[in-house]
Length: 372
Image 1: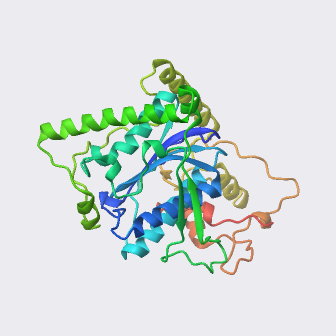
Image 2: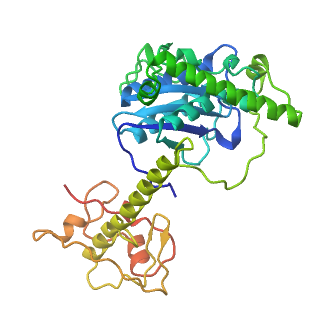
């Protein structure tokens, strides 16, 4: 079940999304086609939803972005970006299966300047940390250098695959621009663009040296830019991973006060979120069915809403449903027939599921349509 998380404007995040089964479906191409698709889809959706991109890294099996959600539209951005990128890459690769894994996008909120600096450095050094190349700035996938943040503007032409210029639903421009912006928190923290770039460069060198030392101790070699683009995209990453490891929702850069504030804000949000939700089945579904079938005891029935199944043998204290309008009639809540016209009778399957105690999962909320 997706983790409940607040969506607020002005927040800075580090995003990560992995390809299915850790395959190298995002692998950079020698001709630059996958890099073009990645930049075009990211730039299009960032401009569409008011997202500021601070840095990015297109790895072979996953992608990283550090962004600021200016308008509070992060879910819409993620939906559009990942959908367009997945569809375009599937057309490009000739891949018919799922593209991304089924886990929720990793979205780490950066709550302090130290956290922003640390995560941005992690994103830039990731090619070296993963053993892809010795010099992280030589990675052939889409990335930026430290001295380009705040100045770099990608100009990307529309790829030849997937993006139909005659599409009436979406206007795919011939060329888009993606501007790489230095976060305001770093500009205020270090007093200017050059100072922030230098601080980021220093932190990247520390992380890169640490990664090289660790791989040298383990006897692991580094790849080259040529080997990265020549690898098969069906290859899978084989580095060790702890199964079921915790996935952080915020980062503070090692600042105790910021960590305590983030934990308190998180606890307050979850408390309000849980108190707002009504336990048990959807009150809308229950109210609709109870309005339709007067006098039928729904408690012994098996009503399944999403992932919740109500057993026949356990009476459940249903929450009180809101009263129906005074002028409401049964026909206002009648189920839709195959041709879309309302019907005063319940479908046989719904009657069997609600009144007959059928244990088969039936999503009642898909069976009803309130008349306009």
